Length: 179
Image (cartoon, rainbow, N blue to C red; front, side, top):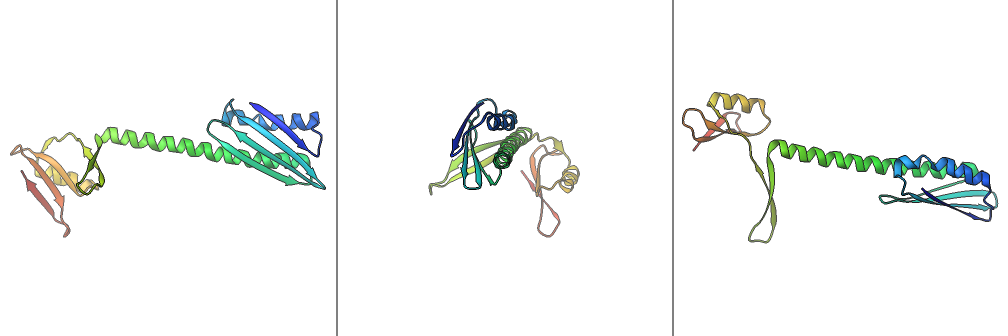
């Protein structure tokens, strides 16, 4: 962790330096060891401002605090950066979880994505799903369709051995397409 402290119209004392270093230690967990901080402390009349710039591989954050007390301004700026860092880190983690979840769902269901383009020049994404089609009776397929949220079931007919599609019709009855 690299920390640079700049004072404008104020002398940086060892107490201010140690206070800043103590408060910035918690960012090792959030941003890692490669984070660098630039702390700018400014005093104008009775306004004490602290601006903290955080740069790391993943984040570039800025927090600013302004009060009539220097230590309170530093704390306010650090709290702002901490909220931003936590928000960004949780967003990254959630994104990774969503990608992993989508990938596992695709792997479990056997869905593969294909790109196709029509003559009009448009590109379409075709989902190709491979599912184990076991042989079953029409009654079993109807029971499976009733339990499922999908509008149809593709199955191999137990009696004829051909591929069949059982689907829900708009009127609520079931339709059967035989191969």
